[in-house]
Structure formats: C-alpha cells, structure tokens
Amino acid sequence: MLYLTIEAYLEMDTSEVKGILREVDLFARLDDELLDAFAEASTVIEFDAGDRLVGQGDPAGAVWVIVEGELEARRNSKPVAIFGPGDVGGDLSLLSGQPHSVDGIFKSAGRVVRLGADEFKAAVRHHPEVAWEIIRVLVGRIYGLLEAVEQARRQAPRPDEPPHVGDWPKPDK
Image (cartoon, rainbow, N blue to C red; front, side, top):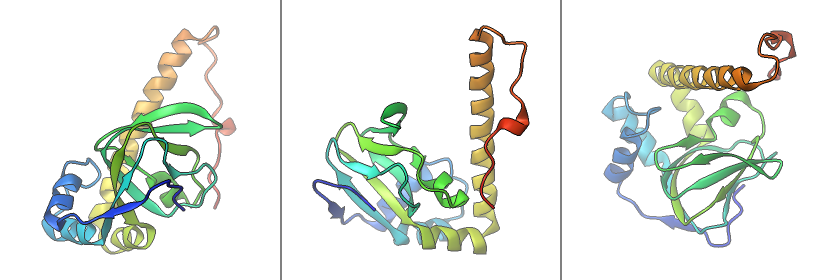
C-alpha cells in the first residue's frame, strides 16, 4: 500500500525503463528479452518530498528502483539508510515473505520504477538467472554487513567476544 499526498503514474517509454533497469546491479546481467518483460510489467510513480513509499509492518507488494530523489529508510522512526538513484528496495520483504522492516519516506521529490510482486515472483520461478542474480546481490549485501559488524566490533569496548550465531534472528518458515 502506498501512502501518497499526490500520486502520478507516469507514462514512460519501455526502452527508457529498460535503460534504467540495465543500470541496476540486480538487473544488469539479464538478457534483453527478460529485461524487456520486466520493463513492460513495471510502473513509474512520482512522489513529492515527505511522501511514503512503504510503511514499517506493511506487507510486501513490489520491488522498486529509485530513479530520482532520495528516500530515507526509518526503523521505529529512526533513520537507518538513504536510498538514491539506482538503489533497489522491497526485495528482501518480498523474498522473505516478511512485512517491510522500515518506513520509506522521500526526502525530496522522486520517481521509482515499481515491479509488482506477482511479476517479480514469476520471473524468479521461470528464469533461474534472475534467482542467481538475486543471490549474487544478496551475498554482496551480506559481505557488506559483515564488514560493518566487524568495524563496529573493533570500536566496541569488548571486541574479543563475537556474537553467538544462535542469537541471530531466524526467518519464518
């Protein structure tokens, strides 16, 4: 569900959407036919500063790519990340089946390319290369998080005690 003060679905040429997707890590290595299918199934939406793209706790409904503007991710009202042009969101909620873990609020006017859950899931089911790209991108994110954890531990008062893996959150089955 989108929370917008003004919602504008823009007419954008499929080739323009394809060009945007081609620049995004998740879609960059896909063949032209599959990228065309994604572009044709996508919607471009315009937002004003202060508009909400997703709400913490909302069910997953789409994968989106920021085209213009900045979106601030807030968890429990605290900023946790900034998404800018080329960044992808919604994928973790969609793939895990979990609700959105953050509020996504535009800091400035912006546009997104939105790919609905059904189209994204069908592509993953029918095109293994999409699944491999998702895995590749997610593993890259995991490595980035591990590096951030390591840096935080180096700055922590007791860096000699690693966190116990059993304490990590477990996904629902």
